[in-house]
Length: 267
Image (cartoon, rainbow, N blue to C red):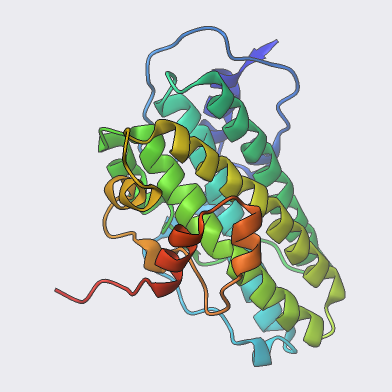
């Protein structure tokens, strides 16, 4: 039986997409190990990351196959980074409660399935992820997560309550855009990802409530744990889906806090 540690190391040390997509099989997570912090994932040259990225195409541009490919490459790479970062967290924080570790592992496998769905849609458009301009935006926050005194909580605030919460909005926004452009197959993939993200946000919400300090509100916990420059302003899109957040277990005050959030002013 393979260990969770070996499975996660294989994801981060393997450079090809096949290494990132390999299913886990039966895993043993009982053996205690010291924390292992990996600064950056191994990547084949064709999947190398860079700093920064261009804006996503507008919905009105999705009738152009090139615009659809650009979106799908961005979506696929978000999922690839999520796969890697969930593996990173399982290695970096081995002392997390067993229930949380199981939840993160299940989420990792679902992120693998999302990545494969987007890769399949790219293939249907005659394209691949290799060679695309790939931003390291998610990975830019790994150092702050490793340095946080509340590492697991900071990870939940970053991945579940910021990036994945925002995807509750972005998936539906682009679902409707792809549907209007006549790409129903991609619209269905985006709906599938949206539905799974509700569960991912719920996992983060549930464990934030269990890990926060006594007497602390969920808003105060999020503000304390999420690494700067991330904030609640990054946890949403233009289309704000309250119902999905309610299904994910976010409290009414927290939902209102995110809805009202504004980006930090330039210093």
